[in-house]
Length: 475
Image (cartoon, rainbow, N blue to C red; front, side):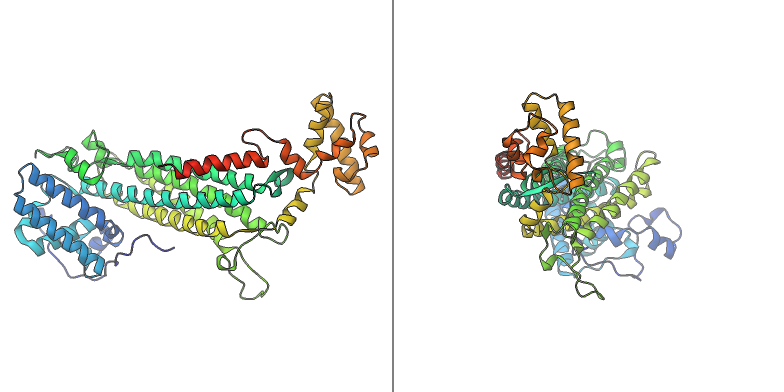
């Protein structure tokens, strides 16, 4: 999996440095404990959010008179320079400074001197990290939403091309009724649209500013929290300082959304894996989305769908990890919460990578229309259509069901489909059957008969597609 960030990883065996919180301690931290408790190995990817939050905090401190304008300008410039250093790869992440926050603050003090020590006024790492994670997750949700939109557009465009393509619909993985391939693709679209809606709702709960809650009780400084929220694009500020630093519901909710999204991609993957097999042969994947075998020269393996199906399990694990992490914690912040980031980052990376792969792959699918139609003509897929025909001739549905069941058994014994039985044979089961019955026993006739909103008739599929296009392109 390609990670979503490209921040250089911290280097081991960093030189010892002065702790920014060490005044109360008589001896240095044990070297193993220092490495064991450090989080900079993974939370350094929050550097953009940490710097953005710190600059907004500095501007607010100047606004309320805690900093002078000159001090604020010096801090902001120092933070901007540090961000450039990080993005150029010129920043050494030091394990002894524990986390992204202390690394950046220590570098700021080193760069601008005593003024840098004023930045942390009125805040704690507890509300600082909660703010950083919310900012990071908000951006990740936006990127996931963009990939979801791209994938859904690809599905809609493919569905439009295949609105008239006949394929078998399945229940219990047995041929059930003919459907449009476009209709099936639009079912995938609906699944992913619910995912997009859930993520949008989660984003609103993510977009709450905890900064200003300090360690747990708020602060005695006259902070303008609304100003910081506006600077950082938050919809509102948190209402309770204790909850604000302890809450990870928003991350759990995102992971639940991610698990559902991956479950949908996994179901899509399973169908693609089946459809590309020689036994089905419904679709072909371009070579660029497949790999071969080291021993069997004929093999063309659908590795992208298989890998997405496999990666679904790790996102389920990420969700369960965070649920388990939080279930026994008393209020407010505990060191346990350091463990929230790795499952969250892993899920973000996995979902983004999986969506990107699917958004690239889906428009390139090559359906075998003849193979799909032939499959729809097997397994007595139009049996329900024959029953509906009899009902329209005045036969009660339960009687029609029994009549058609007997006709299916006869056709099965004869080794043919219902549509292949002579009219005289069909009339042995019911005198209500006439020559026009064969119009409903074709796959195309079956599709056309289901002409109601949400149905598989091609004109209804096109109506679904039109509605989807309007929704996807709406401002």
